[in-house]
Length: 633
Image (cartoon, rainbow, N blue to C red; front, side):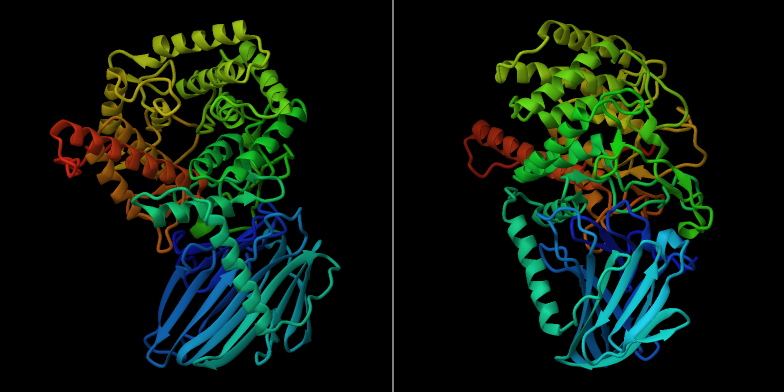
């Protein structure tokens, strides 16, 4: 199956309303427009034959010894694919100018700018869109040698070239071959619009240069608000940009990932659509950005979340649904795209997500944590929304649900769900006190304390010496790595350290962490999965907060080696170190930020304690790795 680039061999570009993946060979093989959750225009990532793509690369047939490298222009979302041969060196810059302050737009544009910096190099362009997840082959109109239009159902795509490049039609595709010498350049734009949209104006190199400068200026300006100054600046900056790229600008709603259908096990059935806004993932993403100083993103999401609550009960009758479309629409009907082969044969390919109908009580904790900033609830409307949720939760918290991992094996009394309902009540009570707001403090307090006691009595397994996945099992669950962070238990509490030790023994494999053991706790799905990157970084954070700084640093440094060539992560790491699942994954990048922050803070505390202990300003912690890696799962 060499027709598919590895999942990790991609960079991400976007305009904050949609996003595209560009492979390290110069192929746009995933792009949905006009929104993240729209049907694909390019989808060869899920079917190499039917999906559609746009390839722009040096002509390898004419260049011997060709080497290709991909990188981001520093601290931006401008992706550079560099082609190097004995005869010449050239590069393609792929980018989309952000539409951060604009409302929903029907027109979105990918810019592909080519230049040669040494010698002479030949390039080939092949543009082959396939609309509606590959179900519609477009009608092609070649207006002239520099402009072409692809007409699909409800969508048009315009391809334009700068002077000096001649486009031609070939079997329904548009192709071009051109040669550039040092100092010369060319450019192409791919503009998606609603059907009947006007052909964009004539394209010039000067216009493309101005757009590239505007894109670069946007990202440098946005990143200037980042307050992080720790040891892992590059990794944190790249993660922050990834989270911003995965945020729908008009509503402020972050999505879980840019893709759908990428497998957790190649050839398996665990292939989900992640292009939606999960309340949980979004709240954690925004919290990570807030910790870096990006407060506007937090405010936008709080408004979006408040609007979801005010919109009224969901189809299930609950105050919140676990996920929504980026505009707040709760309808995410799941369908199977039988015509698609799937990534390397991984089927079924699903669009939409049936998990939207699940009951996951933990989302109320993440929602409350997002609405309450250090005890400050902000606007009156936000407070009214929160009180309505908490009043409902006092009557409904004590029931089984599907849990954070969206298992399809039946409801359980998941410990993590109880943990986050405790968080919901705790944050509400704190806000009522700090902001002096009216609340049913008595009922909330009673519910909070009942949840706390239930977790201690039923979520703790005496024989395992650990908090466990749900009340009727002895299986461990890495989601509970969040227990100290949310304030339920001290990171130095003996019960927590015992739980951490048990996880090290059962869920950790060479610093990589599994979510849980599906053989011991069936989740209703066939096959297996890799280690979960969110959990691996949460493990780093938990180790650091518990004072195990050396082990945490060792695990963090190893995790960074699994990033791809441009610093991005998918959802999971497979048995051979390959990236698996949808890409890039917000969960992974938000937890990388939290882990880096925790390591910096705890290292500074350790050094301060060392200086006080021996009076030496140069004293520092011993950041040596553990004597041996943790035992494999």
